[in-house]
Amino acid sequence: MEELRTLAEEVGIALQKKRWLLSTAESVTGGGIAQAITDIAGSSEWFDCGYVTYSNASKTECLDVSAALIAQHGAVSEEVAGEMAKGALANSDAHISLSTTGIAGPAGAVPGKPVGTVCFGWTVANAVHTERLVFGGDRDAVRRQTAIHALQGLLRFMEQH
Image (cartoon, rainbow, N blue to C red; front, side):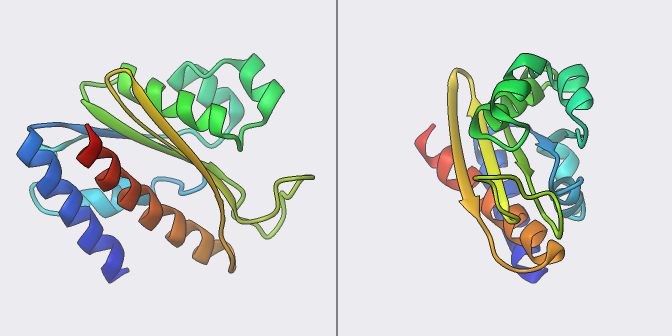
Protein backbone atom coordinates (compact mmCIF):
# COMPACT_ATOMS: atom_id res chain seq x y z
CA MET A 1 0.00 0.00 0.00
CA GLU A 2 3.02 2.27 0.36
CA GLU A 3 3.30 2.50 -3.43
CA LEU A 4 -0.32 3.64 -3.66
CA ARG A 5 0.20 6.31 -1.01
CA THR A 6 3.35 7.58 -2.72
CA LEU A 7 1.50 7.78 -6.05
CA ALA A 8 -1.40 9.64 -4.44
CA GLU A 9 1.07 12.15 -3.01
CA GLU A 10 2.72 12.58 -6.43
CA VAL A 11 -0.69 13.12 -8.03
CA GLY A 12 -1.46 15.78 -5.43
CA ILE A 13 1.76 17.63 -6.13
CA ALA A 14 1.19 17.50 -9.90
CA LEU A 15 -2.41 18.70 -9.57
CA GLN A 16 -1.41 21.55 -7.26
CA LYS A 17 1.23 22.72 -9.74
CA LYS A 18 -1.47 22.98 -12.42
CA ARG A 19 -4.07 24.30 -9.95
CA TRP A 20 -6.38 21.49 -11.04
CA LEU A 21 -9.02 19.50 -9.21
CA LEU A 22 -9.49 15.76 -9.74
CA SER A 23 -12.65 13.69 -9.80
CA THR A 24 -12.84 9.91 -9.94
CA ALA A 25 -15.39 7.42 -11.28
CA GLU A 26 -14.74 3.99 -9.82
CA SER A 27 -16.42 0.65 -10.31
CA VAL A 28 -13.93 -2.21 -9.87
CA THR A 29 -11.92 -0.31 -7.24
CA GLY A 30 -14.99 0.51 -5.16
CA GLY A 31 -13.72 3.88 -3.98
CA GLY A 32 -10.21 2.67 -3.20
CA ILE A 33 -8.61 5.36 -5.34
CA ALA A 34 -10.61 8.10 -3.65
CA GLN A 35 -9.65 6.63 -0.28
CA ALA A 36 -5.94 6.62 -1.19
CA ILE A 37 -6.25 10.25 -2.26
CA THR A 38 -8.18 11.41 0.80
CA ASP A 39 -5.70 9.62 3.08
CA ILE A 40 -3.33 12.46 2.09
CA ALA A 41 -3.63 15.46 4.39
CA GLY A 42 -4.60 18.55 2.40
CA SER A 43 -6.11 16.60 -0.50
CA SER A 44 -9.18 18.84 -0.35
CA GLU A 45 -6.98 21.37 -2.18
CA TRP A 46 -6.85 19.13 -5.28
CA PHE A 47 -9.57 16.47 -5.00
CA ASP A 48 -13.15 17.47 -5.80
CA CYS A 49 -15.19 14.27 -5.62
CA GLY A 50 -15.41 10.58 -6.33
CA TYR A 51 -18.21 8.47 -7.72
CA VAL A 52 -18.52 4.77 -6.93
CA THR A 53 -20.80 3.51 -9.69
CA TYR A 54 -20.81 -0.23 -9.23
CA SER A 55 -24.06 -1.02 -11.02
CA ASN A 56 -24.83 -0.29 -14.66
CA ALA A 57 -27.81 1.79 -13.56
CA SER A 58 -25.60 4.01 -11.40
CA LYS A 59 -23.19 4.53 -14.29
CA THR A 60 -26.15 5.84 -16.28
CA GLU A 61 -27.78 7.83 -13.47
CA CYS A 62 -24.69 9.41 -11.92
CA LEU A 63 -22.28 9.68 -14.83
CA ASP A 64 -24.59 9.95 -17.85
CA VAL A 65 -23.18 6.79 -19.46
CA SER A 66 -25.66 5.68 -22.10
CA ALA A 67 -27.47 2.45 -21.28
CA ALA A 68 -27.24 1.62 -25.00
CA LEU A 69 -23.44 1.97 -24.87
CA ILE A 70 -23.29 -0.39 -21.90
CA ALA A 71 -25.56 -2.86 -23.70
CA GLN A 72 -23.45 -2.68 -26.85
CA HIS A 73 -19.95 -2.92 -25.33
CA GLY A 74 -20.50 -4.13 -21.77
CA ALA A 75 -19.71 -2.24 -18.58
CA VAL A 76 -16.13 -3.48 -18.77
CA SER A 77 -15.04 -1.74 -21.96
CA GLU A 78 -12.87 1.15 -22.98
CA GLU A 79 -15.94 2.87 -24.40
CA VAL A 80 -17.70 2.82 -21.03
CA ALA A 81 -14.51 3.75 -19.14
CA GLY A 82 -14.13 6.81 -21.36
CA GLU A 83 -17.74 7.85 -20.81
CA MET A 84 -17.39 7.31 -17.06
CA ALA A 85 -14.39 9.64 -16.97
CA LYS A 86 -16.23 12.24 -19.06
CA GLY A 87 -19.28 11.96 -16.78
CA ALA A 88 -17.19 12.43 -13.65
CA LEU A 89 -15.68 15.55 -15.17
CA ALA A 90 -19.00 16.96 -16.40
CA ASN A 91 -20.73 16.36 -13.06
CA SER A 92 -18.07 17.98 -10.89
CA ASP A 93 -15.94 21.09 -10.56
CA ALA A 94 -12.84 19.10 -11.51
CA HIS A 95 -10.44 19.85 -14.35
CA ILE A 96 -9.36 16.23 -14.88
CA SER A 97 -10.83 12.84 -14.08
CA LEU A 98 -10.08 9.14 -14.11
CA SER A 99 -12.25 6.03 -14.23
CA THR A 100 -11.95 2.31 -13.60
CA THR A 101 -14.26 -0.53 -14.58
CA GLY A 102 -13.38 -4.19 -14.52
CA ILE A 103 -13.71 -7.76 -13.31
CA ALA A 104 -11.85 -8.34 -10.03
CA GLY A 105 -13.09 -11.90 -9.62
CA PRO A 106 -13.17 -14.57 -8.59
CA ALA A 107 -16.32 -14.78 -10.75
CA GLY A 108 -17.68 -12.52 -13.48
CA ALA A 109 -15.57 -13.52 -16.45
CA VAL A 110 -17.28 -13.49 -19.83
CA PRO A 111 -15.96 -14.55 -23.25
CA GLY A 112 -13.14 -12.20 -24.22
CA LYS A 113 -13.04 -10.63 -20.75
CA PRO A 114 -11.30 -12.88 -18.24
CA VAL A 115 -11.08 -12.17 -14.52
CA GLY A 116 -8.55 -9.37 -14.10
CA THR A 117 -9.75 -7.40 -17.15
CA VAL A 118 -9.82 -3.70 -16.31
CA CYS A 119 -10.58 -0.66 -18.46
CA PHE A 120 -9.39 2.82 -17.59
CA GLY A 121 -10.34 6.30 -18.70
CA TRP A 122 -8.69 9.67 -18.19
CA THR A 123 -10.08 12.95 -19.47
CA VAL A 124 -9.27 16.64 -19.43
CA ALA A 125 -11.13 19.26 -21.49
CA ASN A 126 -11.87 17.49 -24.79
CA ALA A 127 -9.08 14.89 -24.55
CA VAL A 128 -9.90 11.33 -23.52
CA HIS A 129 -7.51 8.40 -23.22
CA THR A 130 -8.56 4.83 -22.48
CA GLU A 131 -6.71 1.57 -21.88
CA ARG A 132 -7.57 -2.09 -21.32
CA LEU A 133 -5.31 -4.35 -19.27
CA VAL A 134 -5.56 -7.80 -17.73
CA PHE A 135 -4.06 -8.20 -14.26
CA GLY A 136 -3.22 -11.44 -12.49
CA GLY A 137 -3.81 -12.42 -8.90
CA ASP A 138 -6.77 -12.57 -6.57
CA ARG A 139 -9.49 -9.95 -6.11
CA ASP A 140 -7.40 -7.76 -3.81
CA ALA A 141 -4.39 -7.92 -6.13
CA VAL A 142 -6.46 -6.92 -9.16
CA ARG A 143 -7.98 -3.98 -7.30
CA ARG A 144 -4.61 -2.84 -5.93
CA GLN A 145 -2.93 -3.06 -9.36
CA THR A 146 -5.86 -1.17 -10.87
CA ALA A 147 -5.58 1.71 -8.38
CA ILE A 148 -1.83 1.95 -8.93
CA HIS A 149 -2.14 1.90 -12.72
CA ALA A 150 -4.95 4.48 -12.65
CA LEU A 151 -2.78 6.95 -10.73
CA GLN A 152 0.33 6.20 -12.82
CA GLY A 153 -1.77 6.75 -15.94
CA LEU A 154 -3.12 9.99 -14.54
CA LEU A 155 0.41 11.31 -14.02
CA ARG A 156 1.38 10.38 -17.59
CA PHE A 157 -1.84 11.92 -18.95
CA MET A 158 -1.23 15.14 -17.03
CA GLU A 159 2.27 15.46 -18.52
CA GLN A 160 0.68 15.49 -21.99
CA HIS A 161 -1.95 18.13 -21.19
